[in-house]
Image (tube, rainbow, N blue to C red; front, side):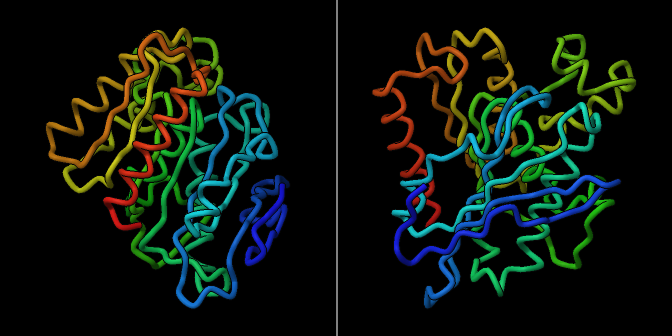
Length: 261
């Protein structure tokens, strides 16, 4: 990845250690910026059972806008089932709070972004806000609130999906425990104080039902949360055309710019 000249890359930074597993993330920061920069936390997808941070490389627009980037890996199901991945992305978020000064980032301008299961984890990390229930591995005295969440066709409610292969495997022995399944489902963490959300979903998604985003958007709007929902007509699971991707990027940046991030 070619970085703009003012950026510094720090690869495989360990943000947490759990039972012999090292949680790593790649950081791209602007250490000499005169003011602390906004930062986007990116979370890869893969059904909670595969995927790796190195597959994520499209940060050019964020670099152009002067964002730092934190590209995060997390425990997949073969290492630990739910809620491990949520605990990890919360740890990554808290790490940025705890190291904000040395990384020269503005903790009031944190955006969390992910697609598919990464979208689910982005939603959980952001919607939990200052709820510390999954912060057992990483603690902070800071008040945790993110500025925005970008959810790309993410899972929002595991209750109707608890027997779906990837979800059931990730939920493990708790797949039949309704209260637990709700606790790891973003839609149950929405409040009137939730951060602004940008959501995109194809209405022909064969993997994560389009209805998942519809349910989340309905809940957000009913509580008055600032929300932008972009539907991709005939869109599959992220397999969008270049033109659709271009349109999504335009609307996403308008959304973020309107928030003055």
